[in-house]
Image (cartoon, rainbow, N blue to C red; front, side, top):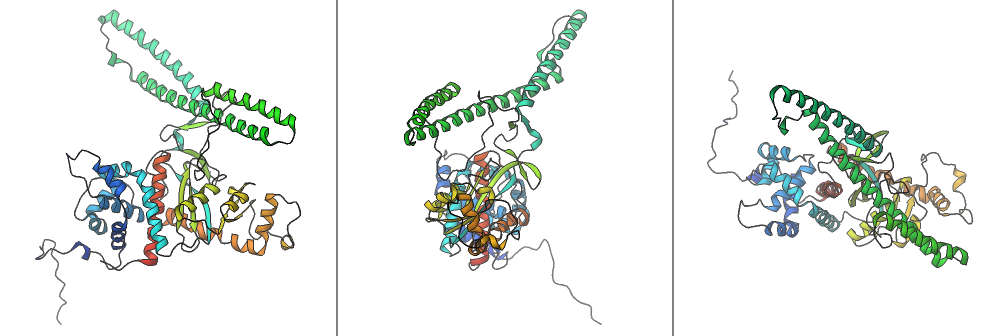
Length: 493
């Protein structure tokens, strides 16, 4: 009986004609789609930064290639610059994207750092492509947030109260070590003569001095933030008192409020030395964490600051605590496209709904017809603000199980003279409200599951509000590209 013969196999066989790299991947691969998308993107903002540099020196890599490597890495869950560098050598898809180039991890990391501000523009361009592909309907959007670990440990955070205590203790230890060092110097000088050098300072003393220096820097920064927070709080109070002084029906109340305005503004000036009314942030900007401060502008004893990433905050999620950020997303019902992506270092979601709706309107050119959000976003002024944006809001006013509803509660119109909370509660318990709100979870929660579970993105690589915001935009940009690829993938090259 004849034996089977094997197909030829030789690891050293040269090709007679070099193959085209685009033939290395199967038809319909994500890389082919991504190359088409990169060709459609406007990278002028990135190129202008590169061209502004001195023309001499090493030639830079193509912006299209670097953007493609980063986006594809985020799509498949490979974000580390070192892992991307290794993948360019070992992974065919990365090698095809690189087109024979072999950028090292420092170039990749530097490109991401230098051009982080341009990722918001790329997110918007990809969103426009999704709109052109018919993936955005703006009929019903759901808004929610998820906590993502920052590039810092919660064990590297210290409260102001602890900083004061550590400053006192370290000063005592340093004085004790200095006294010991002086005693040792005196003994050695008496035995061997003078000549002790500065570098002979005990290592334990140097270590404590360095630690004290870091604590003092963090303490000073926390005090400055608390001072600014307290001054801003006083100016906000003055703004409300000024409105009362101008609009209240009672003349006595108006006079009292006018006097209170002067007092509050003077207190604010005493704290930070600045004149002016309270700052008005843009309508589409999320609220930021404010350091808790006492009435004299000093930090509250429990106010904390992280030594590794000072912008990050300790946040509760699922019964545990992490040092990170609160990442927000507004998601369209039709194909789970992220219409707006932002983050804040404020743990509660309260105050985030209207800014996110403003971002949706800015990004898409029009508001969504319906918006849903859980009870964390509720505030009495939210329904009126949503109406001003031509968006009907369905927002939970309390934590309650979907099945825990009494059918008799939904019968008839809402009570007369019902306040905003009661009116929204009745709206959600109506058949229409229950049907619409029941869609909230299935719209937005799968997006966070796909990002965290499917792609394994549970921690930021960058530090600081600006940098993590740019990375969150890149994460959501890659999510939208994957949705567009799976729904409208073009033919392979």
